Length: 116
Image (cartoon, rainbow, N blue to C red; front, side):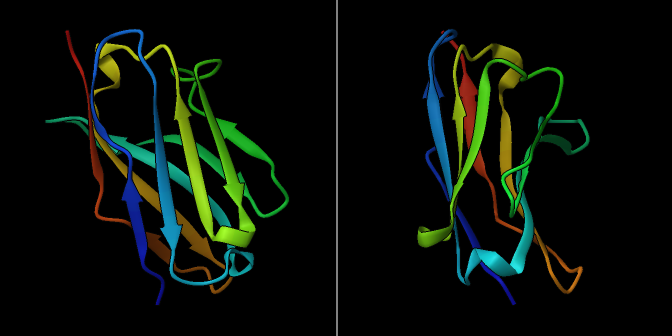
């Protein structure tokens, strides 16, 4: 079993920045993909960004050029740097991991609100 704990959410004005962190309870080398999803009220959970063990990244079109995902294997932590935030980025952001055993793991989520 893997626990994922997110932090770094909050309230920010449009155009501002936030950095989300997700700490995993086990070594990240057994987590072949890690990433972030988000869910706005009344909407489905959507992919934001993912990163593989080798560092290959993938982004939703809506965040390309504004968000950057990275991982620190030594700290078992994945980050999401979010810049030029827009009101439509408001959502609960969930950390995700795919284990080498093909199991999915989810964090409990952290709220990001972009509002003036």
